[in-house]
Image (cartoon, rainbow, N blue to C red):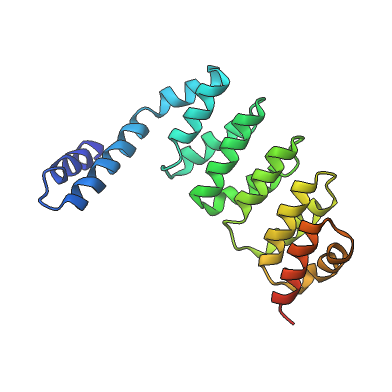
Length: 188
């Protein structure tokens, strides 16, 4: 079936419409990346940090259960850069099955990774995320708290009202600004 798909895409490269040709070329590139998936997985297992990061980003336009599994595994790499890249790609692909692994990654020891996880979770509109985001407001890292306030505040949900009032009064200038804005947009 893949051969027929590739044949169809190769035919589309000959289309009169330039936009169709452009889309076909991008689709073929994705298909070729998927064909090299075993090689990419091997790079993630044995490569140097930069090779691993490149491998993660090579998967950024692909979807599917195997891609999700590969990215979740990469999110547990010993390198902070690889973990952050995997988390960013997981957020960008928008697969609802990525939410639970992303929430689990909030426990990462790296504040950088935690920040990226929160940003990735901002791509999902799921009220169940308010609990984990609220937990991140206790982080000692100011950037983590700011991102958690911002994402939680976008929900407009009264369940975060008390936290927003606290940070509006006692947070850093950026935390105060985020909280005050959220309080103004919050549902009654």
